[in-house]
Image (cartoon, rainbow, N blue to C red; front, side, top):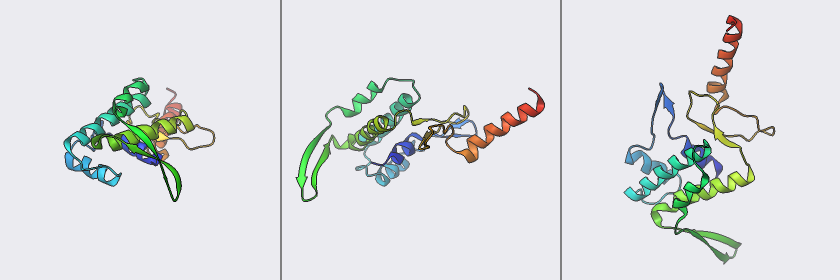
Length: 164
């Protein structure tokens, strides 16, 4: 699973005009998100599992909860070795309603291992989005330089000019 899917899921609760908007609140929108990212049927249990893993993963990345809260998604989940013409691969088996949420948690765990501290919330206090810092120096602070970064730099500049 691509790391971008993790960031996309985390960023489905943006702030719009000061209020959090849940882009997965409606079942049709959540079902479309699932379908676009390899989910199953979009049934009630699957949608609930997707929303729960998003909530828990956001809390873990923000440092508000320990990573262990993600274990509930991984209950009854495993990997089986399969050998075919392409060689050895590991197939995930999980209850159908938790297959995509489990893949997302496993991808997050792999990302955290390969790139520790690179997935983080935007440094703008007025933004609820997340970023994956791919810079060599690991210094990215904003989800978007064009929006959050530019706004904060402009505010700091204005504060320096006004002497406050």
